[in-house]
Image 1 (spheres, rainbow, N blue to C red):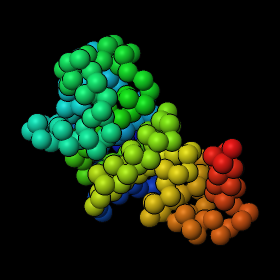
Image 2 (spheres, helix red, strand yellow):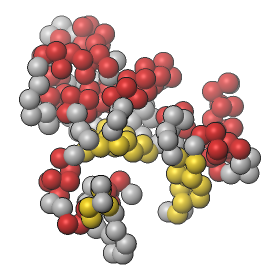
Image 3 (cartoon, rainbow, N blue to C red):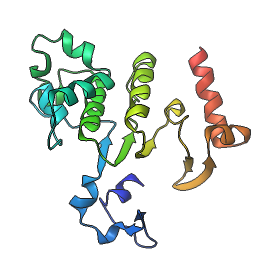
Length: 201
């Protein structure tokens, strides 16, 4: 679904509308300029932390950069680095942990300030403490924006206005967290129970 929305390939029937406009009538670069993606495996360049965060931002101030760093829970990590924001991350971010890479991608998204945010399994490699901080920052940064979240970890989507449960490429359930939990025989309630039990262990 996310690949269709970003027009990596086009649908063969039906329409995808953005503010009433058929996206197939939009230039791909224009469409994608509205979007900020935080992927499961962020693309990083063999350059500094600042370069990797600011990549994609047309104009930014140091205040904007520091705000993005703090919201993404990266400030302590950067302060611990000998060269701070000018520290190099290595080829494909080899010097960073999985969680650090994802937080850097979140800072990049915050600094770019897109109209539409796509959050693709972006907390999958974070420990519970970091995940909570990132989620808090994420919900603040996504205020008044269209936000699409792909997640298997259901705690990531609890606050969403609408949750769409997919099974075998088709929609199985739609509702809020509270509405979906009421359906005791539903997929969402089943997975919520399993994940809650795992966390309690």
